[in-house]
Length: 208
Image 1: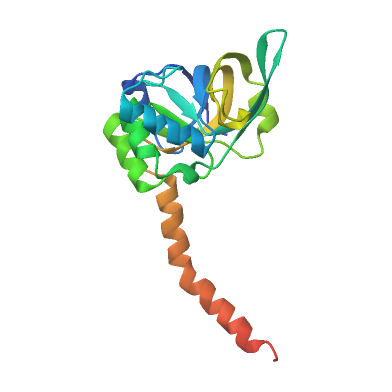
Image 2: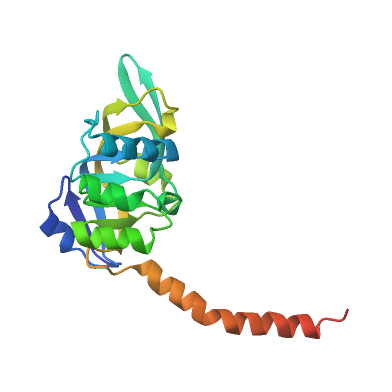
């Protein structure tokens, strides 16, 4: 198994640009959860208006993770943490990456070429987290630092979270324009003609 590199948040641009595709990392420190479409839409509104966010996101690590928080004895607790599909947010992410100078974005499913270009420009990486790691990720929670936008349902609120050893995450898009997803798409496209020939042969051989 590859060695897992620990990143202490916040990270600077030089550290981010030192990460390579395929490298495995874990996160310790403060990060921000942005888990839904309404969250992303509101972030774009704040960027456009210049209004100050209730939780600082400049040079931040942000994760496309879902969670459910409750309040007990005046304290907010996050009951679980699990990645959601980042590709749903492709239309928003290039602007958010550039606008906030994000250093890390994480989730599952990857981001598109426009987001990868923004990452290369600003110095940001995409971390891919396994979708079945809820227990592992939840155990990394140390503290809910703050929760904003409580007019939204809990999954869409802006949450600042303190974690220790959150991972493993794989550097799937680095800050130099390299993406594991590009290779997978190329390999899939290369195999498609062979797969279609096999399906057609099987269809022809099957008695009607």
